[in-house]
Image (cartoon, rainbow, N blue to C red; front, side, top):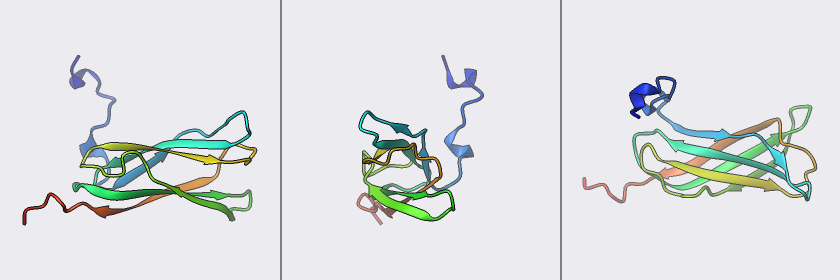
Amino acid sequence: MGIEEFPAIESFQKLPKKLIVKGGDSALNQNQDAQLMGLVINNLGQPVRDLVVHLVVFDEKEIPVIHVSTQPDPGCLDQGNMASFKFTLEKFGRVIKNYYLYANWKYDDSKWNG
Protein backbone atom coordinates (compact mmCIF):
# COMPACT_ATOMS: atom_id res chain seq x y z
CA MET A 1 0.00 0.00 0.00
CA GLY A 2 1.54 3.31 -1.06
CA ILE A 3 1.52 6.61 0.80
CA GLU A 4 -0.81 7.99 -1.88
CA GLU A 5 -3.59 5.86 -0.41
CA PHE A 6 -3.34 7.74 2.90
CA PRO A 7 -4.04 11.39 2.01
CA ALA A 8 -4.68 12.30 5.66
CA ILE A 9 -1.03 11.65 6.58
CA GLU A 10 0.87 14.90 6.82
CA SER A 11 4.17 15.03 4.97
CA PHE A 12 7.28 16.60 6.46
CA GLN A 13 7.07 19.35 3.83
CA LYS A 14 3.85 20.62 5.45
CA LEU A 15 5.33 20.74 8.95
CA PRO A 16 6.97 23.98 10.16
CA LYS A 17 10.73 24.23 9.67
CA LYS A 18 11.66 23.74 13.31
CA LEU A 19 12.33 21.12 15.93
CA ILE A 20 8.86 19.91 16.92
CA VAL A 21 8.22 18.65 20.47
CA LYS A 22 4.90 16.89 21.11
CA GLY A 23 3.70 15.38 24.37
CA GLY A 24 1.06 12.69 24.72
CA ASP A 25 -1.50 12.14 27.44
CA SER A 26 -0.23 12.02 30.99
CA ALA A 27 -0.90 8.97 33.18
CA LEU A 28 -0.31 7.81 36.74
CA ASN A 29 1.54 4.61 37.55
CA GLN A 30 0.87 2.41 40.60
CA ASN A 31 3.15 4.59 42.78
CA GLN A 32 1.16 7.76 41.93
CA ASP A 33 4.06 9.00 39.79
CA ALA A 34 2.91 11.16 36.89
CA GLN A 35 4.31 10.12 33.53
CA LEU A 36 4.40 12.08 30.28
CA MET A 37 5.80 10.63 27.06
CA GLY A 38 6.31 12.30 23.72
CA LEU A 39 8.23 12.74 20.49
CA VAL A 40 10.76 15.14 19.04
CA ILE A 41 10.72 15.55 15.24
CA ASN A 42 13.64 17.21 13.47
CA ASN A 43 12.27 19.30 10.61
CA LEU A 44 14.98 21.98 10.72
CA GLY A 45 16.65 20.85 7.50
CA GLN A 46 19.93 20.19 9.38
CA PRO A 47 21.10 17.39 11.68
CA VAL A 48 21.09 18.21 15.40
CA ARG A 49 22.89 16.83 18.44
CA ASP A 50 22.90 17.22 22.23
CA LEU A 51 19.10 17.26 22.40
CA VAL A 52 17.50 18.09 25.75
CA VAL A 53 13.72 18.27 26.27
CA HIS A 54 12.38 20.50 29.06
CA LEU A 55 9.03 20.21 30.83
CA VAL A 56 7.47 23.11 32.74
CA VAL A 57 4.34 22.24 34.76
CA PHE A 58 1.95 25.01 35.84
CA ASP A 59 -0.52 25.05 38.72
CA GLU A 60 -4.15 26.20 38.49
CA LYS A 61 -3.04 29.86 38.73
CA GLU A 62 -0.64 29.48 35.76
CA ILE A 63 2.40 29.65 38.05
CA PRO A 64 5.30 27.31 37.15
CA VAL A 65 5.71 24.70 39.88
CA ILE A 66 8.07 22.18 38.28
CA HIS A 67 10.81 22.41 35.66
CA VAL A 68 12.62 19.19 34.70
CA SER A 69 14.74 18.10 31.76
CA THR A 70 15.57 14.82 30.05
CA GLN A 71 17.54 13.60 27.08
CA PRO A 72 15.45 11.93 24.38
CA ASP A 73 16.47 8.68 22.73
CA PRO A 74 18.36 9.09 20.42
CA GLY A 75 20.09 12.35 21.37
CA CYS A 76 21.16 13.14 17.79
CA LEU A 77 18.74 13.46 14.88
CA ASP A 78 19.17 13.80 11.14
CA GLN A 79 16.57 15.78 9.18
CA GLY A 80 13.19 14.01 9.33
CA ASN A 81 14.08 11.64 12.15
CA MET A 82 12.28 11.29 15.48
CA ALA A 83 13.28 10.69 19.08
CA SER A 84 11.15 9.73 22.08
CA PHE A 85 11.24 10.98 25.65
CA LYS A 86 9.59 10.17 28.97
CA PHE A 87 9.21 12.26 32.11
CA THR A 88 8.34 10.67 35.46
CA LEU A 89 7.40 13.02 38.30
CA GLU A 90 7.70 10.94 41.45
CA LYS A 91 4.86 11.19 43.99
CA PHE A 92 3.16 13.94 41.93
CA GLY A 93 -0.24 12.32 42.59
CA ARG A 94 -2.15 13.70 39.58
CA VAL A 95 -1.92 13.69 35.82
CA ILE A 96 0.01 16.48 34.15
CA LYS A 97 -2.54 18.76 32.45
CA ASN A 98 -1.14 22.27 32.15
CA TYR A 99 2.41 22.09 30.82
CA TYR A 100 4.85 23.48 28.29
CA LEU A 101 7.49 21.48 26.40
CA TYR A 102 10.53 22.87 24.62
CA ALA A 103 13.91 21.60 23.47
CA ASN A 104 17.49 22.80 23.28
CA TRP A 105 19.99 21.44 20.77
CA LYS A 106 23.14 22.17 18.81
CA TYR A 107 23.53 21.88 15.07
CA ASP A 108 25.54 18.80 14.16
CA ASP A 109 28.20 19.99 11.73
CA SER A 110 30.48 16.95 12.18
CA LYS A 111 29.59 15.63 8.71
CA TRP A 112 29.96 18.98 6.99
CA ASN A 113 32.71 19.11 4.37
CA GLY A 114 32.85 22.85 3.82
